[in-house]
Length: 246
Image 1: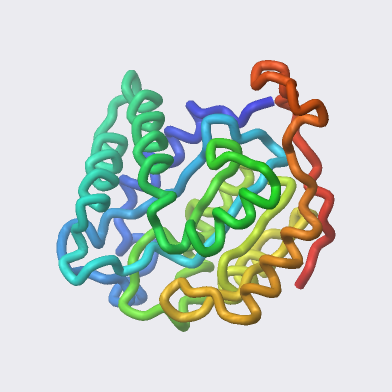
Image 2 (image 1 turned 45 degrees about the vertical axis):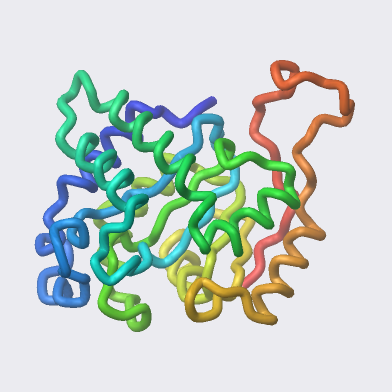
């Protein structure tokens, strides 16, 4: 069973239409506000082939980006975000699918993807289209520490709904803080691991050790028969065969 992309489109659109002051109140000052784009949330990515029981990456919140906050990739993404935000009922699914295609194209260029997501995908022989990725906090912030209250407010407002819709079988948190926040708020049993993250989305010794451990435990998803064609591959959810780690 595939998570309803119509339901995801509506949920993502709802997040995009959220006034951050209504969620965070006094804490809203923690959000970056350099330009209009900083106040536009980034709800996340759901691959076209993602299935319940699949792999979900969770991270802290979007990086600050360039000083101006509007790189060429930002502009592509923000255009898709705006179109989904403003879509009516008849166009919301198409706008959602368009945004997911944009993200699938630009995410491999992100440092956090290259350093953390790509090694896991390679180890499991997974394609980006088979996984999902969400930030616990959808807005850029003035600082990367002390975000526990913002995580909690976001979780109660919409992040819980996203995770419940995705119904992952395996969650990998990028960053220790994101891992602790996720474990605090998500009580449903799920295979879990986290990858410590160094400043600047770099991989330090602890991160390299975690990636090696995960790579050694993840089963590869490719067909047993190397000549099996893509259309013969099963689409049933795969158990990822890992045990929760704190």
